Image (tube, rainbow, N blue to C red; front, side):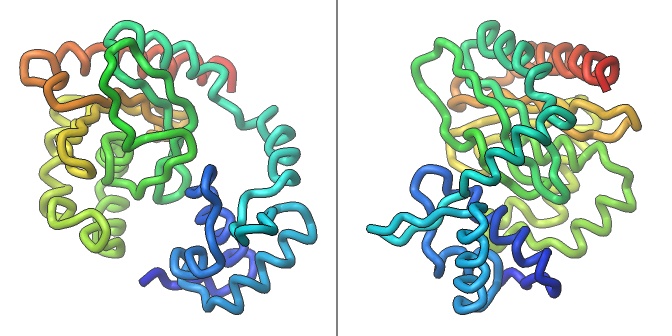
Length: 255
């Protein structure tokens, strides 16, 4: 079970992050309490206070909570400084057009990756593990794996000691298994997720670096297993690395 943050600001942030995982359906108070480790009365009290300020909204018929309009307005302002998607969009589109697969751009936020952009290629069968707004812990899905793999070893060691990925994602995410994939990712330069989250749904990712040289974002391709056979993965990896390198340079030039 998730341990709740000790301070009010952390609890509010945890609720908003949890709510962002339900952009279409919304989430009940009980769902959000479970996701954050908060007691249900505490979650309800904080959500009610946030609703009064416009940070969350509630469907009066079904009772589901959604992110509110005030967050949209604040996001529009913050985007002027932090929005990198305008630079990433061209890379995502080129990857989708060149491969026929679904292409994505994700950002590292703390110990998660968050999907910001999606562009579908012309191949008719899709993988729906990733979508805009989807969050995964570092080490899960190819974007989270490539970011984790390129962090300094002490950070990786600390993370894998503290975080249990197996409870939700299964034994394939034991620390020893993750370390094996980290080693392979470092060898190749890009990460491969061979259907570990959803069987038959493969992904590959390359890291995009900030000005300090840290892996801050990732470009990803996903699709069905038959499209990621041994003979094709080097080609896809080369395309990802090329676009990631170009995007790293573009972001550095506009920082």
